[in-house]
Amino acid sequence: MKRPFSVVALLLVLLHLAAAVQAAPLAQGPKPVITQPEPDAAVRGVVQIIGSATHPQFQRYELYYAPYPVPSDNAWIFIGDAHFQQQPAGLLGTWATGGLPDGAYVLRVRVVRQDGNYTDSDPRRVFVANKRPIETPTPVVTREPTAVPTPLPPTPTVVIAVPTVQLPRAAITPTVAARGSPTPTPLIGEAQPTPAASPAQLVDTARLVRAARTAAAYTVGLFVAVGAFFAVKAALAWLWHKVRP
Image: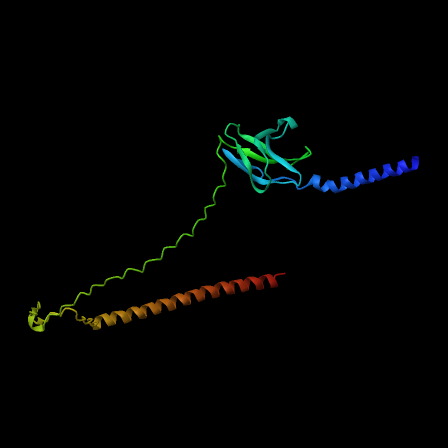
């Protein structure tokens, strides 16, 4: 009698395990996700929370927020009302941040199943900035290349040609020289003849050249004689030292 009872108990355990294994994927289901706002995004005013919240045993989903870092599980605050319609991908709800102090917060969505159990999404950290301005990246200003000025062409020099006025010969009045001989007045622009040297000037120049040559010859002879004297004196002194006992 004990053996049939043991077999029945074993079969019941196996059936229970099989049902649990089959129900496990249904109990786990897809994990809810928050896609927006972006991680560590700066938000203000009414914030739209976008993501997905579905499950085969779906009953409802709920939105929560808490200050960061979360001090305890009791610090999570319920946002709005529960939602009884699954959201595969879209708007999960809105979060009014107007009455919150600026700082870091975390968001999460919870899917409650029909058996009362639930699955939470990964927390999403954001920064509330209602009073201080949201920092925006400084645009990079690209400087345009400076245009090199084109040099101006050189200013042409204006040359004013003054015409030479040549008076006719008939209009020139002859000038009487001191001895009475008429000396014609040269025309404007004509080259003047160079006066020839007189014979007396030629004779004086030749005499000076001859005198300079004679003085040069005497000077050279004097230097030669003095040099020869000192050479002979040095030679005699050398011989004297050689022959002296």
